[in-house]
Image 1 (tube, rainbow, N blue to C red):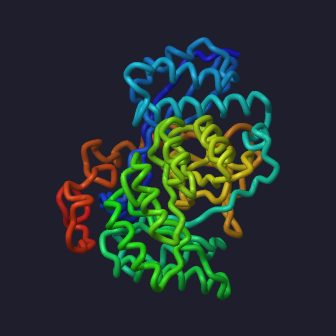
Image 2 (cartoon, one colour):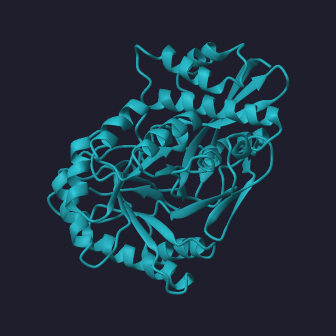
Length: 393
């Protein structure tokens, strides 16, 4: 079997409501989702959700190769970007190609990827994550009630702009999940997406912990600040979770060796091989791992095969337009199907028909860091009417 070609597509994830975090909001709930399809001479195609940046150069590295040599091809792509660097969206392109190759490998073996990777249980524990910072209380409660109806007992909310607002929201979600779980204490997490300084993080979380039990605080300071994460970890009771935006094993190592992270995260967009390597490094330090992302199908398969998987993020209950996945959610867990490969199917006609919904790449959203992030003296009012459709800061 040989790799012969690729196709790139871009669909849209329509949330049907505003979504975002402390950095910004997609006011119309429409988010671009790039897709890579890798073709072979035996007619098997693999799918990876991720960027297309520099894909022509990266594909030249693997063209003509046997797609089943996945990890060797992953390293070959890393070597191709040695001088310019593989960080950011280029690492996402490597991850998309890597995920597509794993899909092909499992299809060729006639097995779902979770089985090929050595997984025993197709159930993957999940937590609710509504990207909810722009919702009013009524909308917020309705979103988490839908998660509770599926048996989820853990939730992560977006915050970091106002401690009293965060306390109120955490209390709301605690009550929603607690009622659904017949009084059992739910796990509560707060994600601030790198919006604080070290001192802000300790003050904010310490204030919340006067009345609430936080399971973890996520990305309290800048992603590369190992010392800062360690300072936060020593100053609060909650675990510190981070890693979703780190692009490479070498970026995780300083945080882990500094004792600066308690929950090691990787994002779905960076690929399966990256997750497996980070999970191994974390396991060597007795740390759990937790995958992040919308439709993190590849990492769910991989999570079944590592001994230190803790829980995986469940964002929207619907996949992007034109994408179907062989899984469902019940009793607080993803349940993976038995379709060979990833179980992802692409309807290219449906994707083409939805092109008119694609937001312009330069539109605002949570991917743009506000000018005053980390330099705010007073609490920030949470609202919609902001420049570039981001939160008022």
